[in-house]
Length: 451
Image (cartoon, rainbow, N blue to C red; front, side):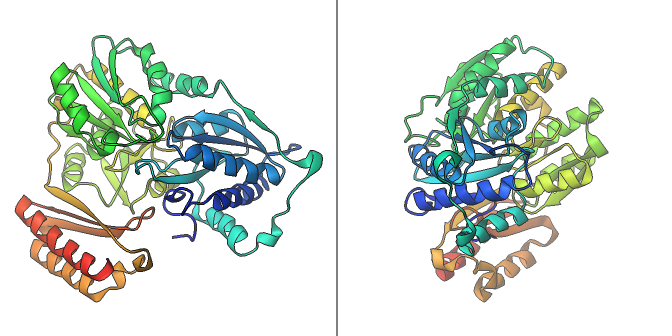
């Protein structure tokens, strides 16, 4: 992992870890690196979007200062979803895009995600080049003055352009459906109502009044209990929960059951296969995907490819091999025919189209996907112990003991987060008591060695 960038950009506690100085330097270096092979114009143009957390304005100001100080122009999108930045960079023919967000994290965190002129997240090599310019050769950053500094303007129609694109990806209307939407008090609060009204269904919105402090606060895709309760109480046909920057989507069926990213990818892949739009008969997922997902896909004659954790690695495989659907259990789902990154609202629209076409409830569509008991526990570790979990003999030993005990009837995945000081311990097995026993034993050793 890079020195500044993790699996999803630069991230940390805003102002004290992800400092204003760091944001300004990222703006300077990114403007230089991302535009040196860009379009030939007098000045480069870089779009900036942000989520609703209180620190986003602070980091936006720092990024603007950095970008304009090296002579590039900034165009502000305001509060938008991360996938809106990815789409609008290409739509407006800008040289790069920046999203200020810590996604599903709590309000004290924030992050900086970078997009190229094509709307794709940056490959590791380009992020490494930006890091090297900031950390190793800052003397190569040339500041501008006078008439050569960049300008700043606001793009007021950006949300409408993005919403119209999402609306154009489906043909039908969703009359007769009652749909609950949880905006997580994040970016979807600025787009969802204007986006979904067109489709003729009845929508109930919750957690769509951001204060700057309540993003992801017991709501959204990481805290879906409120949505489940609402769907059942109001008799909704389906509910969708987004995260803070709306690049994730989880669903709730009419019975209150959670339909996670695995299941959404599975049923959408089957639907796309029936419609003859599933390219190369394949979906791309990560090693986190449930064993039940793989059994369902095999039973439906659909191939799967697994990558390491991170939607960027899913996307890389999709681009390399010509696949058009992929994603993660957490709800990052990429419909490559329509988007260059995971898009929660796009996912919701596609699922509503599938439900309308099939005339089946979501519980029926997802009902034949087996569930293997699974538990994921995050262990917060000390900063100085990052990168050491797989080099610690005691941790390796207990993982091996778990593998020997579960054999072919279970699966163990231990990995360190790319964005936070966490070690994630996930186990699947035929019986929940086995899962809980071995998660507990591994977590105890991780805490003992790394906390």
